[in-house]
Length: 227
Image (cartoon, rainbow, N blue to C red; front, side):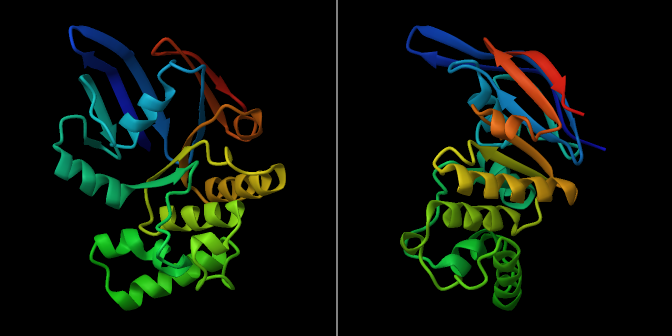
């Protein structure tokens, strides 16, 4: 089953009288259960592509089918709904809410989806255990290491059982040991059947991915299988 299908995707930013074409008629298919790393130099378009695939931004032209639905022309409200129900995000800077403890941070996406309190807490506890933080559920982000905060972010990303997990430099702020631990968790998620797309500058992640897309000047110039 194809989770991501992109055809002739273009993104152009207008800056006064000037236009900047960042993605150029890009085609891409990603099947369920794939682990895809996106690499490329600064300005190659990889972060813009991640924003398109994560429904954080809309293309200028072209189509994007996510799990069978064309989301390229949806308005912002509908895109927000898609993000909440079908996509889990793991950011380099964690993006946790400092006033909330571990359990509460994990519950946030479920609360937005209207899931009842009992089910929210039950699932959040299960996810905290899964990422090795069952004994830290009452701690706030400031009381956790960077690696632990990223574990919370992963648990939060899984809370709505997304069809797609998007990771943006998930180990960029971590030391070597913590980074390896996070990559092991992501490996296990993929082995469990999750579809993962990750932007990275480092070989540590790309060597674990089953497929590596190298971007240059708004296009995918190499699509390499690690199988």
